[in-house]
Image 1 (tube, rainbow, N blue to C red):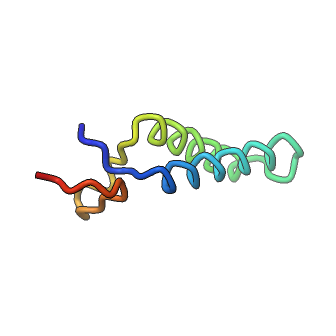
Image 2 (cartoon, rainbow, N blue to C red):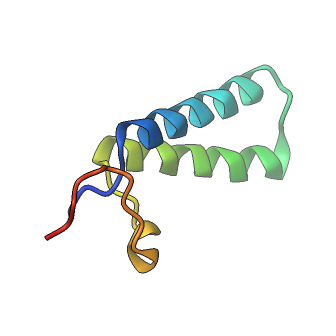
Length: 69
């Protein structure tokens, strides 16, 4: 796996995950919405720590700023 996520991308994903967690724990979201957003937040956190997003591959997106060789 080559890294394809830059620091801004990773930071935004972590912030979205934290926002979802705050909304959940303050009971703003619940039920199916909470489950869907919770799973998405977990995926965001995992991809942020790995610096790799599998959905970027088919589209050729690379936000890391490094040229692929």
